[in-house]
Image (cartoon, rainbow, N blue to C red):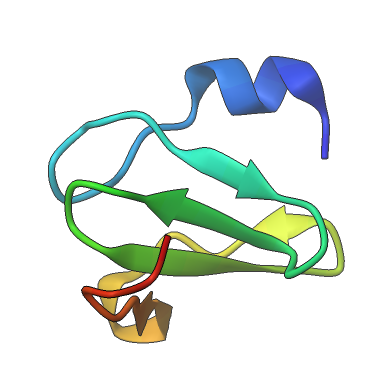
Length: 58
């Protein structure tokens, strides 16, 4: 994932920062508890494609 792209991407719902999880290939919004997938190097920033993160997840 390009570091410059990470600097400009925000959560499409709350416009908050995203955390890159390299192992899972996801961009995580901690505020909305959503993980947006990265497929073939392309972040998929649609709410219906994101997975919910459980409350007890670190």
